[in-house]
Amino acid sequence: MIVNPGPWDNPPRKWVAGDEDGAINLSIIVDGLGARESLIRLHRGETLDDHDLALFGVVNFQAFLMTYEPVVALLREPRRPQLHPAVIELMPVLADGPASP
Image 1: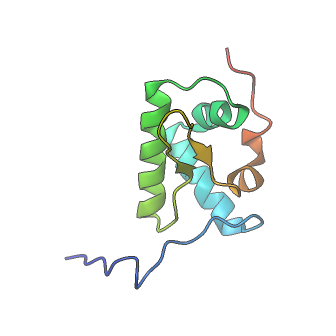
Image 2 (image 1 turned 30 degrees about the horizontal axis):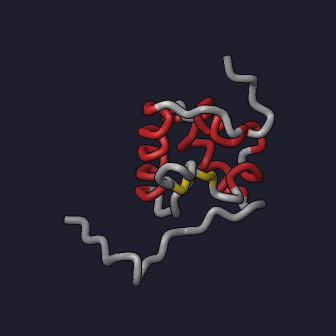
C-alpha cells in the first residue's frame, strides 16, 4: 500500500531554470504525452482548443506523479492558462518550435 503523507511533509519539487534533472523530466512529460505543439501554442499566445486545455491537465497530473509542481497554471476565462516561468528555459525548443498551421 502506498501512502502519500501529503504536501505538508513532501512539498512538490519546483521547476528551476538550469536544473538538468528538471529539464530531462520535463522533456519526458511533454514528449511522452505529445504536448509539445499545445505548449508552443500557449507560449505564443495562439488560440487554444479543448484538446489543448485537457492536455494541460494531463501534463500537470503527470508532473504531480513525478512529484513536481504544475507545468501550466490553468486559469478561467477571461484569463488564459500560463506556463510556469522556468519551462521555456528548461525546454527552449518550446520557444523555437514550428509555426502553427
